[in-house]
Image 1 (cartoon, rainbow, N blue to C red):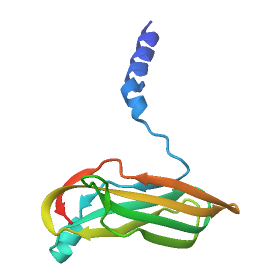
Image 2: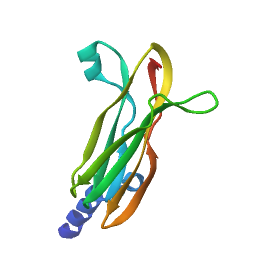
Image 3: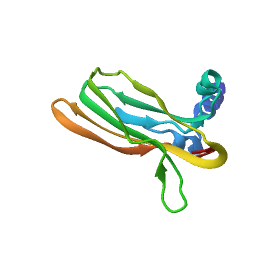
Length: 150
């Protein structure tokens, strides 16, 4: 009887609640990730200027040839969204399996303190096992309001 009580206690403690089970996200073996926009603390420290920054990642468990990533920082507009950076293209002739490409140099300086919603977008194309593979456009999970007008 004690064994059953102990077993029941462990199953309750280690069971994943249904609310958490739905929040566990399966990630594709090859994917783009776009962080939420934020005010760059490094640029503020180094240049004493405010800037909106977004960090981008390309992750793949296979070798990639001719990887091309197109990325941009955007803001919400009154009728349509606007790019605050041009569409930037990063090219890599070869990326080995399990190597994460981390792009941290995409930012735009603030002109004023007007509250604005920002987000990042990215899409990519690469050759994997001799076939051209395209990653559809992804964007930041949240459109973040920042005191930074551009």
